[in-house]
Length: 410
Image (cartoon, rainbow, N blue to C red; front, side, top):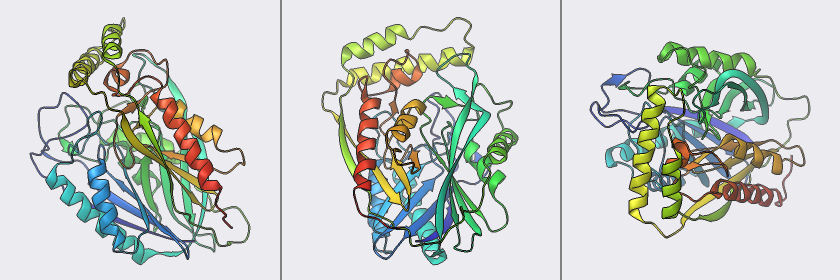
């Protein structure tokens, strides 16, 4: 296997709308830290795959397809595009069910992605890949609870090293909404994922920070501030627990890069009565703060708007898996709840091979809650019927198992 990395800044335009918080009224006024687009290539003699991770609240399928077409001319066989889900970025069409990407942002994202991929191709060298996982306390907790406790969250890392054992780079996958900067912030920035990158980057080692199954997890109950200093404090928590080590002893070998396997899944839209039930059940929790009450109010409004659309056609999404050596990546185009991401891993790791779930990848459908989740903002604004999250899990497990039916060698 060979691997390479490239990074390019994503330009922002003063005054353009910001994404992430439904009650924002002010456009971007400045930058707290640069937005970045990272590309990591993995290739063997038969297939070249690139993972692009952009500091955006989401990516929709229209711009994903544009990027895939553009990088094909560079010799890339398959391409995934993921968003970090920073809420301090331009609005990208991040609404339940997805929306067209604003034209100016799409142009900038395609341009930055191409530059990052070109740099990654130029950086390719012989590499080894292994996965590690750490439990990080006090990083985040279940945000669906008005007064929740912190949880020991599973943070994954793919460590890319040279055949001699020197660490070249790290892809961190954190199952946490990267929301430290508040709704009143009008400066663009990478938020928590930027803090993770800064905390882990050393010398020539590059760091990519992606977001996993974070639908119901945030820093709401663990953050001590709402500024860049707090993103760095939380990023340091990740760095302290996630011991980045050289690969296990053994022969470097020739790990294969197999084409992704895609599973198409149809998800039924919520029926009118489901919207009505969710709206009626989403009462203000006793003792909840003003911000929680405001968020629930926003959720009711969005739910009524979705109900008024009267959609009857199912939503169709592609859930993909790719095998890189003995590590399998899974791409979900939405906000999967953490327990569902863990269910994918548990159901498809029978042989002990690591499985890492990426959220916000290759499109954006919206929240994909677990069955039986109490009425909250997340369930209010989810466009799909109850049980859809479990259907996505089944599709992901099917994709993982299908990817492993191919012959591969280490």
